[in-house]
Length: 337
Image (cartoon, rainbow, N blue to C red):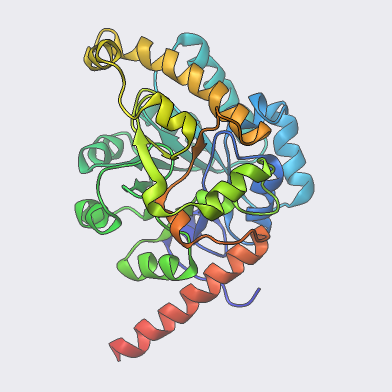
């Protein structure tokens, strides 16, 4: 690989290419994470996926990644308050990650303060998933170092604003911004860096890679789908989730029933209903990713499917994106002179 790209993200994460292989349930197998980091980007460990889908004890899974590459990796901590058992498990997982040398954390769906405090003194960096300025301000109060700006083209739990709108909403907060959503081609990547983002997070593009061990049917669904085939549904996890439209998704519909919708809006019942939905979604998504197509298939994906039409190695994806960004930066420099 030739010249590295230097941004605020590469500086804090210690990587060569300002690109994250986003944490994905159920797709983040350790070989995929390792391949992204080995290529100069940053693979993000998704612990629920690591343990409950791919069958690795978290510590042994991290050590497997380390046996493939010594390059930095990140860790995804979903910190929504679901139960004391889950909260205790996530705290233990973060401790294991720290002990194994992880120094980049991505938090989501909760107040990141306790994670920031827990990793303090280790030199670790914490970025937080946001979809609105309000979320960003709360996370800023929690002491985070940067933001993952999840836009309305993302897979999984997407935002409601475009990449441009997200940037305009939070770029004045003085923290590095990572664009997440709608980035399937090298030109998409170059565009968001030129917009002012310090990096990008990709999920769907990395599903269609050789190192991702999701079922070939899932990868084919990503390659065949168009942006118009990606729909938002809250029947999977209780919150809007971007998936490829399949017979199963059409059968479930895209809106929770009236009773569930009412319970999801009630502050006293919302957490418990969400927990039930999430347990069901974990099983449904795992089955689809590992077993392939059936009438029950549910495939998370973002609108970046529009520009994904082949299965590549992770190294080739990272190099194509890096090269496009270098060319784009050179062009921007010439235009500024």
